[in-house]
Image (cartoon, rainbow, N blue to C red; front, side, top):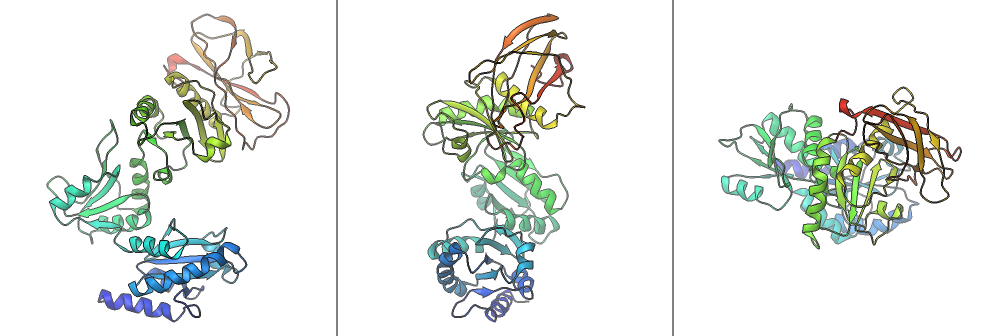
Length: 436
């Protein structure tokens, strides 16, 4: 079918359902899939008539629809108070919620909420997600872009891997740049990540199946360096793994040398925790930074964010052993249960201060390191100390103090001043925990 005629047919169908006195298409259960799945680009607003933010957006949405309608870009809306099935289907929990669909593939709308901004944003969305790279010069220029990562499919657009690649490019176009090139002497029917990460592989070839979910997972994994910068441009790349943050007053703009120093310190540690924990540098404007009441005057401050839990460290500086132990502490606490940990007799001495000292007096195995996994305080925060027991002595009695972390959003119950004390113990010679 002629493409121009097809676009005309979709727009014609949409105009039959427009809201009164506007170009905004009204979507209902009966026409949603037909219109959305056939449209190259459509912005759908899920709203409730009583919502104040929705009322504010409505006139801007109508203005944008008037402009974009002439360009074949559809703006549509769903009244969630009437179309409850559609609201449930797309997990709409707040109003207004906006999604972009490309041939039925959904992506989150992250653009402005005023008419001119909507128009500009949607015009950018209407182009091909995977830029055609028709010759060697276009390919070279694309790879030379300043973006830290570019994905290129070296194949025909209608090949099996090409179709899958373009589908994923549509859904991830907000986070990455994609290109599609004819086969070269080096790559044929291959997808390659071209990366600008320091001291890491510059090219990684996709070796998976022609499967959208598998390709999506690979794209996310390859787009995250061992140690990277966490900001507005990169935050959506990080998946469900916990993230260890080093907060500081350094950035690529105001102190590139300081930023490189942080990343160089983190990279060897991150290599050991690959697939378990992300390591990033972030500036002090991050929301979690303020929620944990960090001191803005300190040069470096470290925390781990694991879902909705925040763990604040009092590690001073960027000592690799302490950062490594802090990371392992979190992973151990995640996995620990009474069947996984060994309990050791301890003599506790509590000190009236923000610090807590623990006196251990017990028979220790040779070259053993202990980690205090959790200590629940009355206010529900989690406080932890990292302990290093050096040497080979079988009997030690020492007061030990190290890093501390707190979880202001912890769901752990505040049961008593000392609710739980768990130790995880491992022979260093086995290499199973905190080796080196």
